[in-house]
Length: 526
Image 1 (tube, rainbow, N blue to C red):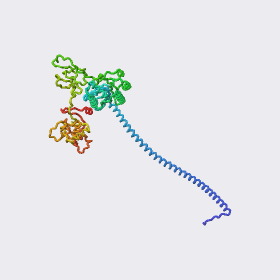
Image 2 (image 1 turned 180 degrees about the vertical axis):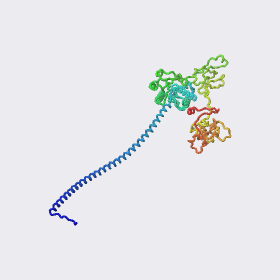
Image 3 (image 1 turned 135 degrees about the horizontal axis):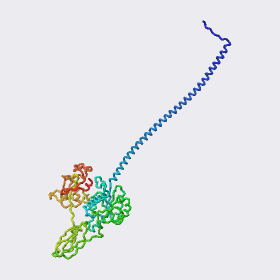
Image 4 (image 1 turned 30 degrees about the vertical axis):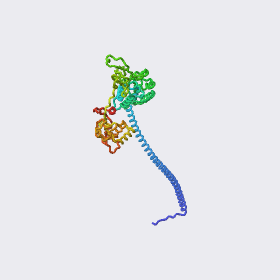
């Protein structure tokens, strides 16, 4: 069926057009409104997007700042950690050192105890001279130890291997003044005896000293006061022995110490203590074997003149006999022999003069009828020193050091050598030469003491064939290198085989074969 087309009428068309236009208008109006709405939404999203972008940027910046701050803090924390570890290590190190020092200090305070002995008087219980000084030092050390055992019964004062107790002794005196006084009293024959006594006293014990302060009592007082003040302030000084009881001048000094240091002080009485010392209440002891209990005589002891007396009946057969009266007897410590203290029977002779060889000793002259006289020295004769050699602990010979030579003696010896030739060692040093007149070296006039010392030095530079095995006490030659292995500067030393030997003297071997250990070596090896 063919299609049919509807053709509206003329009246219908305007309405349709109006409706269409109305609908189109509405449509476009809605689209416009929708467009405006979309445009508004678009602006809102853009703003929000921009806001998000700003927020992201701020967040990124914040994160970046946080990361940067974190890295900086991380570095600072690392540095602080390193500093902390260093401080911990340093603190532990110093704590360990402090603990070590405290232990050492406690050990030193508990073990190293010194005993100070200050003496302002002279030892008179022993003979003067070298042997008397050494014996006095030994006995004083022994007495101090004995009293220390009584004062400190719980301490081992004899443990010298640990060197726990060391005794320091100071004898303060006017050497020349005391020597003159002792000589005037007849206790010594020469001031040199007191000098030898003091030197031997100091050498016998390594910490003993014989201090000469010269004339003036205030010098000795000042020295003793300062020593007392020093030792009482030292913690290691366990005890102080002080011998001032014959002089009231020390009472004010001791008064200031007696309250705080009374337990550490002991006074040594040489004679009965003055009342002021008794009132102090300090411990007092006596050492009668070492110190005089009475004062020295006020004036010099003059020798009594020889007086002619009536001869007893038993001397009737001796014409012109004279009885020398017995002088006042002195204590045994004066050193005079008992023969000199007894009466001496002498034939009367015209004013005999003392012999130059007597040196002020007692003497007696015996003669008959004014004839030829013979001088007899009855003073005690000094025993000749025994010859010896020094050896180390392995019995290897050691050479004693020779004194230094005098330049003037060296010049004289050199001129004599240039004039007469080289000197014979055997003749000038030993007093004999087996070759006699057939010797190739110069004998002639004896050398002086200074020139002989020069020759001894030259002979010492020659090597003994037996070296360290030599036992000849008068051998003048060298037996080992005097410089030792560490100090010898010779490329070819004659004593190279002795460079490693022990050079410390340990004992003496005398010419009769007897041996004696050196006290210093024994004390050191204990």
